Structures are given as C-alpha cells and as structure tokens.
Image (cartoon, rainbow, N blue to C red; front, side):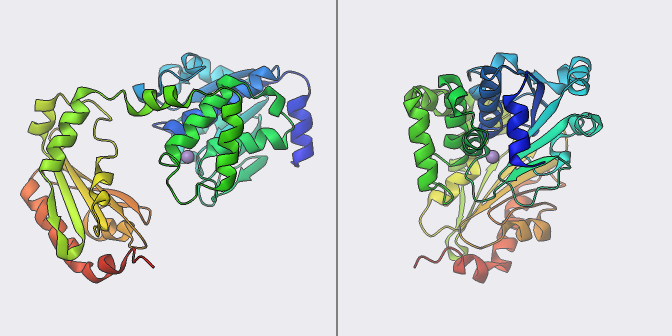
Length: 342
Ligand SMILES: [Mn+2]
C-alpha cells in the first residue's frame, strides 16, 4: 500500500483502529502508542491501545493511559476488538514475537496493518511499513508520520506530551548519538503545543520508590573495579533485595552507572533470583566492544553490541564475580581498544 492510499484511509470515514506495542512497554512504546492514539481519535476514529502486559507506574500518568488495555487481563474483549478492527498499528517492535500471545491475534486479523518502528530490519507482515533505524525513537516517527499523513492539525497537547515522553526516554534525555537536529525541531514543535517538560521530567525521573535508591546505593557499594581491563561489575543478592523491599523494575538501568566512570568501557550487574536458582546478568559497553559476544561466550545470553543480558545457573555470587573477571581478562585487549576517543 502506498502513502497516498493510507492517507486517504486515515482522512476518510471513521475506522476501528487498534494500536499494539511490545511486551514490557517502555516510555517510547507508551509514548508512541498514546501519541498516535490521540491524533487518530482527534481525527474521528475509534481507537484502542492494547499492550501485551502491564507497564511501570512511572508511565501511569500519561494522557489516555487509563484507556489502555493489557492483553493478559482483557483477552476476550481484546480478541473481539482486534478481529473487528479495520486497521492495526504495530509500534516500536520489529518482530511479532515481541508482542507474544497478542501476535497470534494480530496475525489472524484481516485488518490493514501498519508498522512504525526504529529497530533494525523489521520482519513483521504488514501492508505499510515506515521503518527507520536512524530515528532515536518511534515517538519521533509518530510526528513525522502525522506530517506525512497530513494530520498534524490533530496533534494536540495530549498527543504532544506522549510523543515528547517517548523521545525523552529513548534518547537518554537527548544524549544518545541518534538524537538529531530534526529531533530537536520536533521537540520544539511539541513544546509549542503546550508540553510541560518539567512535569514530564518529574513523572519519569523524580518519582522513584525508596527501595530503588536503597538498592542503587547497595549495588554501587558492592562494585568491583577491574581498572586494568576497563571494566566494573556490581552485585545484588536476594538477601539485599529483600532487605530493601525490592519491587519489580527497581533495578532497571543500574548497570549503566558503571559506564559513567572515566576509562571504564564495560559494566555488568549480577542480580540473584533465589526462587529460580539463578543469577541474572546485565551488560553494557561503550564504543565498539560487543557485550553480545561476551554474553554468548560467558553468560548464556545475547543482546546487542552495547547492551546484553544473560544468566548463570547458580546463586553463588562469588563465582559470578570470578566468571566476570575471567571474561574481561579474556577480552581485555578488545575492551581497552573500545571507545578510543579521537
Ligand atoms: Mn523505541
């Protein structure tokens, strides 16, 4: 389907539209979905946002959020709505497996399907694809999509606030390399619609649970620094998690703190899960050193060049740290050569 035909559909009579996004939705998943939701609603369509599962509480203030259905809690009405949809938008994922059980529903539906995404090489079977891996966020693409569809008149403060949230979170507060002049232009246009940037910032970054800060302190004080290998690792045992009152999501992003040290190119955090009898591993790197490869080799996992996960089939934290030491020694030269500043 070409752009003109899609534009005619969206500007034509009211449609039943479903928007789906990936499992464990993040700021960009929710920001792009709800940003598009408001635009399409304002254009007169009947729109539902359906996520595979629940999302973190720091996103539960976004305009329209109260109307979002979590598929795992709303299977039968989600099923009916998806089967009755004229159009389905797939946002912020590049593979149908990323939406789990919801994927079978989307695949079975006869609706016209549209994919908008900024991950590498999407393989979702749709009628219209807007994919660009140079984009910092799918939320930014929603703005460009609205422009392409000649629907910017429907961008209001609510949709702008959601799109802004997606860009803010996926760009690491406008720090990551793919943040472009165009990104800042879009943000400027969003702010003209009345986005309260300070309020958004407070909702996202200044509303953590106490347990998160206690655990951050703990994990940092447990940090092992391997200066010669330009690497650090942090640890949290089940006992430490319990003592701080751990809640799901509390340790999100902790691993990134290791990389804030000058001349450290690899950071790792080990988090024990006693009931599963494992230690979960999270890895990050600066530059071109691949923690994906390191995780495959040493931690039974996988991921991307700069971000990977894995696990060890033990709850022995001392063993985990020694395994890390072994891994960074093995890759020492590559780690030291990573992120060489010109
Ligand atoms: Mn994204």
